[in-house]
Image (cartoon, rainbow, N blue to C red; front, side):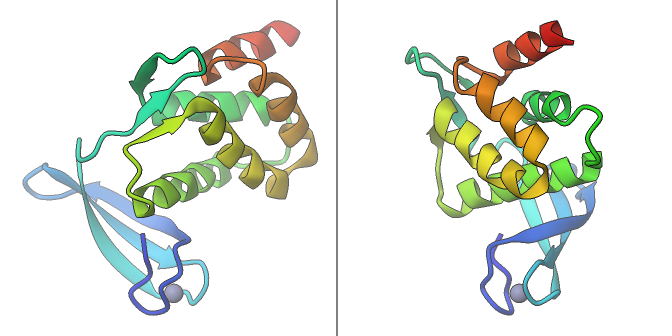
Length: 148
Ligand SMILES: [Zn+2]
């Protein structure tokens, strides 16, 4: 979401609720650069993102699935779930701004890694070492689960 004041693409969601008619999500956002708050209406099911896996198959992007993988990589690390929510918001915002309708699973993983590196070294290494060898976040999550 582009900030109307300064054009910066990174913002955080400060409030999120369905619109009155239920067809979209109304979000209050705060620009990470200038702090300006603005409102966006994001349509549900608009431009669903497709993930292309390394074997060529595809599946619909699932925010919860990505979140699960990140939560496992961040287990016992000093990272709040809200930080991971903001991390995913930032990925989704970048994809939306690039008007992407599909993305490789590896590319998506790399986008998460770049952001994770800024949060926590251990979580980054966990995510990187396992994610890259796997087809998707689900397999990655299962593998990490097995390590515990
Ligand atoms: Zn701004």
